[in-house]
Image (cartoon, rainbow, N blue to C red; front, side, top):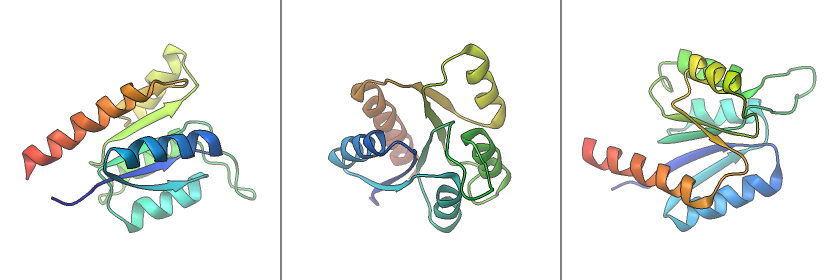
Length: 133
């Protein structure tokens, strides 16, 4: 079976590396991006089994895309429309969750998160992929 591939789009280096480390220990192949433009480029040029996406992302030059906009763009692209997208963010109001779900997110993980919560999600998604093949 091919490696379970995850894209992490997160601007905070400590969180990005923590997530990468947790997922790599779980036999996942992890690519990371620190801003929306790199995340979109990776998502459109490679195949991922899961995208973990921060809501608040820094601007690149004059371009400001947050995770909600990235989620909508990924859902609109046939290559990424069915890829599971989970928001990984500190924005925890009910309205934030509703906006993310309307944009096409499959789920929402609040920061600070527990490593076990993330690993449970990945295990469930790996099992679904394995069952589908």
